[in-house]
Image (cartoon, rainbow, N blue to C red; front, side, top):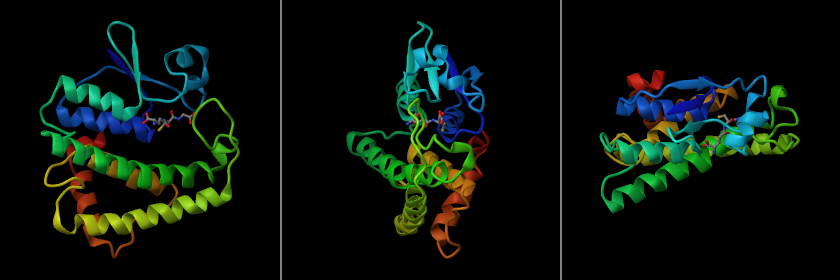
Length: 209
Ligand SMILES: N[C@@H](CCC(=O)N[C@@H](CS)C(=O)NCC(=O)O)C(=O)O
């Protein structure tokens, strides 16, 4: 088994943090995104969407999508649970994971990829070339800012995003805040609950993974 990884990429970090929380070690295979290794024939044969992470299993098959890869490890190593325990809890964690992903992470992606000069003509990850749209960058910034305000309300009465236990929703939240920082989108200082939560999750050893 090995994980096709890129040290700086938020989605690969999500998997690395998840593995660190579970104490699982997986050999890493670095992918040079800057040199477009992810767009080469060998990589596209593993993942036609041309993105990392990709998990190669011992039988030579491949799993893509960071959350699906986390789901695989959750099933293999249920302890500590990071994706819920009973049916309602599993659905609650999924609900928050998706909310953070769609309203925070993807909006931060829109802000970054539609404004960074390095991503001109590559506003969407993958093989198809999409032009940058400045309005999408602006909307992304506005959405992340609004998402942090909503998150602050959520965190008023709980330690973690999906409840009293650290879960994958917190991991996606952590990578969203750090990724948003690339575009200088940071939670407003008035959002005390978000800041307290961020200190809590970013001080866990797994955050360095
Ligand atoms: N939904 C996918 C997103 C994967 C993704 O966008 N990966 C980025 C790195 S964070 C990538 O490989 N980008 C390559 C590119 O932009 O060409 C997942 O969760 O795995």
